Length: 76
Image (cartoon, rainbow, N blue to C red; front, side):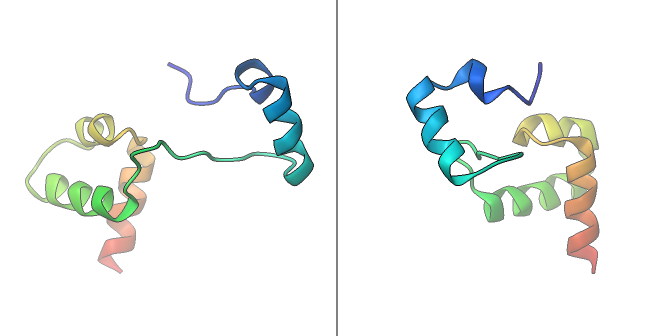
């Protein structure tokens, strides 16, 4: 499953042109139900309970690398 897509392939042309008026380069669009703080707390709790990093990443839709970053940031 690819996480990235070419905007020209997935957006209607009118919307693509509107976005291009405001932004060039990479643009992250979070999912509709994205809850950053809740996800970070969930990640911490799952990892602390011994759930494997890969499994936690799949549950919250993040990469294992991002899970490690969340852990590191919370330890500081």
